[in-house]
Length: 56
Image (tube, rainbow, N blue to C red):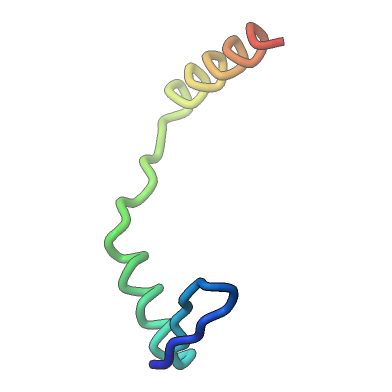
């Protein structure tokens, strides 16, 4: 791992394999997306449409 300074900002340079491993580990910690039923999705879509329409 190396550090690199560009315009007073410090960056870290790591090998691609380590970067991929870090991304995989971070993705595993994220909560998976909640799947909605058709009725729930429809209800949420109408709420978003109403919110969008009020903003115009």
